[in-house]
Length: 187
Image (cartoon, rainbow, N blue to C red; front, side, top):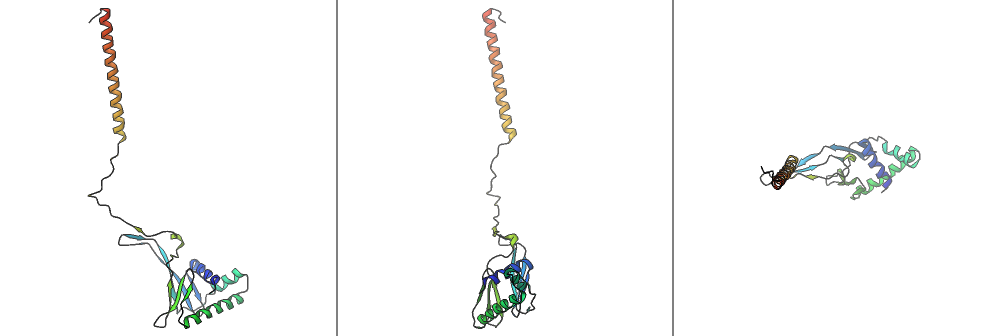
C-alpha cells in the first residue's frame, strides 16, 4: 500500500471535505457538533463517510500527487490507477484494505464496499480534546469554604487599636494621678 498516496488523500479530505477516487467511490468528511450523552460532553468532530456510488473523478488526488512528486498529471494518474487496481484485487479476494490514518475498506456480506474509520477525530479544531464528564453538585452535602471578609479583619484591627489606645490613655491618667499625689496637689 502506498502510504504517500494515503497521506495525500487524508490531507485532501481534511482540506476539501470530499475527494473522489476513480472507479472506487468518494470519501466525504461530515462535521458533527459537540453533544452531551449521560453526563459526558463530547467535543465536535469530523468523521469520514465513503460513498461507493460517487465514482466521478474530481482529480484532486492526481493533481496533489503530481505536485508532491513534481511529475506530470499523466504519470500521477497512472500511479493512482495502479494503486486503485491493487485495492480492487485485495477487496475481490476478501481482504481488508487498511488506509493508515483513515481506516479500512472492506466488502460486506452483501457484497457492498464499506469503509470503517479509525477512531481518530479528523477535526483539526478539536485536536487533543477529550470527552469531559459533568458531575452534578449535591447541594445538600456541599458546604462552601468559610472565607474571612476583609471588613471582619479590618474590624478586628480597629478593635485592637482602640483597646491599645484606651489602655494607654488609662495608664497616662493613672500616672498623672500618682504624680499629682506625690506633689501634694491631690485632687
